[in-house]
Image (cartoon, rainbow, N blue to C red; front, side, top):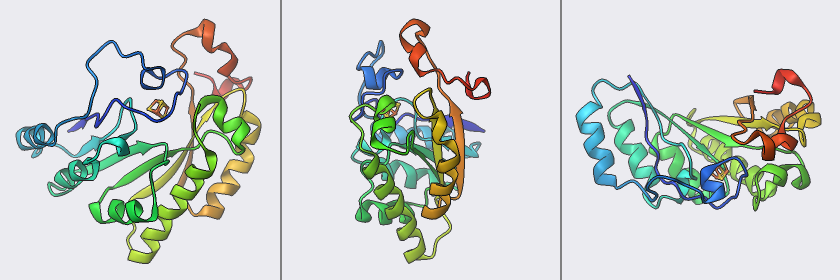
Length: 203
Ligand code: SF4
């Protein structure tokens, strides 16, 4: 009923607990071929209800990412992606809306550049906020309810004090949902400084 397809292993950021961010894959890397995507959908699309089009890597780096999405949506499959939102220009935002993408998770892991870049190394918070606003403006302009836009906040020791303000920011921008996520620390020895003090937010 559900599968995950990783569009690309490439990313513009250097998040410290992600194989893509660390450039430390122990498996093949690259972009999925659009013909392979179609072949998968031709084989199992009739049974599918849901596809996660993301794993490790920034989906919008794939030059034909929205072609993948359209192939799935043409089969009436619910499609979710997750992004660092650095590539959502006004033009891309309109293309996202017309692709029929069902839901998009935007990683926003800090409310100041200082806290944001503790985990999203090389990232720019301003781009995340602008990209999200572009998306919501495109939805409003085209009068379309989708994609559902979710702010996802990876709770770390650096940003846990910002959670209350996060909800206010989400409301002011007009996202559909704000969600907290616990950080996955592969290497406890090097990742210890990420683990929040609030144990309810700790994996
Ligand atoms: S933005 Fe996502 S894919 Fe890119 S390095 Fe960070 S966690 Fe990995």
